[in-house]
Image (tube, rainbow, N blue to C red):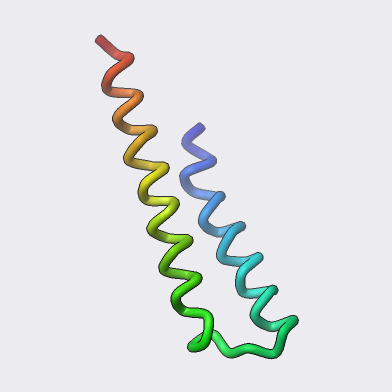
Length: 57
């Protein structure tokens, strides 16, 4: 489960980078996508941490 928190953002950013390059867009044009990916993955990490804390009792 911890691997998911580390590898999912890398995989998603890599796919987004590939998408940008395949459509001849610059990274500057796709920065908002990277921000959404990071925010989404932070939300997942926070939810997983909360679930771990709740189920340890």
